Length: 631
Image (cartoon, rainbow, N blue to C red; front, side, top):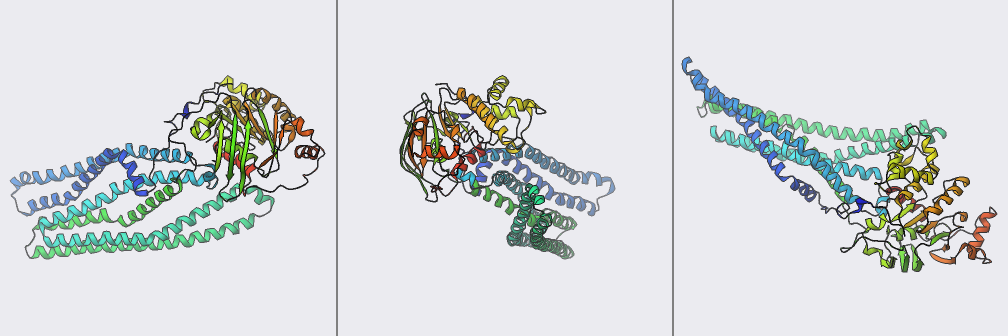
């Protein structure tokens, strides 16, 4: 058989699943440990900068003490040299240390954020299609971004906001103790009370902030939904209705915002009152102690100056508590959403598959979806390598579920699925998918150029190979008519192209991929009859020496295949060549053929075998992972 084109990004290292803890704290610490020396350096620099800042009032007190001591003018400059040098040195050191920490942050922060984003995305890639289908793609992308930002902001808040406050308060108490134990005790009690009250107030404000964020998010979602359906709004003359509908959510957001802002203002009021207590309290005690000759002028200046330094550092601590809780909440939401056990995982000893013949066999396969609806029960099927097989039958009879099992998008609850005589669970999923091509009913393209989308089948394909595949898929002509031809962007999910054009790009992509097993799920359903006939002729060459499985409702699509399997309620009720099945009087295939030829509707509706629309499910799966690059 024709060997598949090499796909270098299927290596074990490139496709490994990162080990990520499901606890927000452990998750944050795991990434912090990777840059622990940087964080230790930054924290040390911040501590030194805070010490320098809080020592400035001490140096200033020394300067004032020399001046107040009545040193003669001839000796004044000599006496001031040491305290002034200390003041200038501390001022310069504060700038050097703080800005050095800032420059280190500039280097580390982008690395930290991209590392978290990359590993969350890598973990997300290995979730099953059931998980992907159960979550909005935009929501998952937002979770990745918010979690990465949350880790960054949490670490920076601790290092740049909370650590300096603690150092400043601690140093203030120590310095005040050198002047007066009374001042030190007052500053210590104030610091403990301020931090404790700030924490409690921030905790009580958290529900209001969450409610406001949720209302804001809901309003944004409604606006996005309405913008995406503007055509329907106009055609149904519902412009005024949508404005009134949106206004209800805007009113809800206003109410939530007022609640949050009102509580925030109460926190700010507490901060100002607490700052007032510290300033007035330290000033009062300092004056009282000075009048009793228990502190000198230097101690008086130092204590009053320290109050302003502490207030400057502590003023926003309540707000920073709110921000910190928000960052931790973002991490928690992301971790709980994304870091869940994967439904389908590779075995410890899984290896790469090397398909030689492409034979497929199902042995006693039983499968049911999570809702308990049984699809297959003890299903046996053998497809020799190189055989071209069509799967037909009524909607919901199990055809697309069978494709999902062969591609290991699901695992059966019983039985085995073999390729070339080996259980596919013995192979790495990436290796298996690299050798299976899929053309879905509704292909989805990347918002990239046409060249990139076709080349996705084989990243090493040159432009000539891409154009040859496009010609074979009858896509070259319409590509040439586009303004930038093969460099034209196709829009999100390929919205700039028609359904038939997207289908031809998907076909060109699998031609480039050249995998030994080819699966087509209503691959020509979006094409007109003439184009379908031309592409079917082209696919004859593509299908040569490959094992081919085709799902089709239009029986003309499978009329030239080697074998037809007719599914009904999860069972194969007929099996044979198209000619053999047509020759069976009263057979299911012949009856369906006659209904289509005569333009008649089916005589009965089939009994669904699963609660979900399994014929559309596979198209959705491939849409989430692109049409032929399987997860």
